Image (cartoon, rainbow, N blue to C red; front, side, top):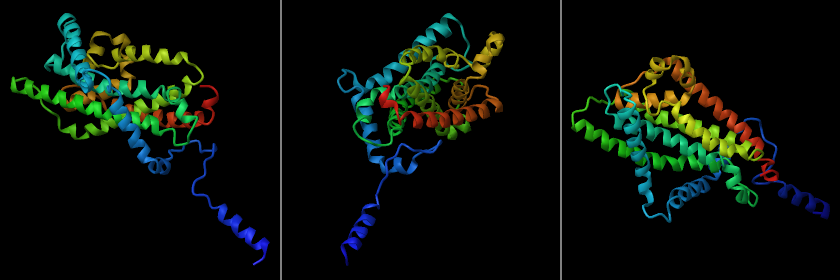
Length: 295
């Protein structure tokens, strides 16, 4: 075999790359194969988020319990005892604990993912891996915190049931995991959109912190959805077009057997969540190509 033939064979072998890293991507690219290939890294990020969050604190994971309990207690005193908001026969503390537990999961997902590019700029600038793994790890790791809070809710549910409270779990509770997935996808989609914008507009980070606090009050966390139309019909649209309100109200129906959600509310929420998630993926994929120059 001549030298020319040997060189041709070597070039042919060298051209068979295992992986190709390129900035050229489709408009909508979920990178499912690549995410699966980096699944060990995803698991590592999840463990990091769970272990290091309260690593050097005195109470540690107990903060997972203290936060929802004290928040539900404050809501019960202010909104149910002082403002006299009725909870449709449900014990006020249990009513608020259900809403707070669901809301906390969304809040944790949104606030953590909304700072993805800025927080992880040092890692992103040194080594390649699918960037979407970082926000995905946040959504998954927050499920651990959410699971602990649901266990606390179940403990208080059994206590009130033992005390004779008129509460019952609805048969639709089997779809509760779907509701949690919708909440996680909404936090992921909004978080990726905000994270992409924060790379250019740093003020958005402060706006998110302030805006999430306001959003809680129009998400039916501490009052029934039906109360809005009854007391403030002029401003009811603020809640009626908020998908979070429908998710939280549906969760109460599943867990406590009380509440009211229309078919429009369910369909609207699903469409809104899917649209937000797709839009977040598109914007996130476009931003990751050049964010290192602006962050």
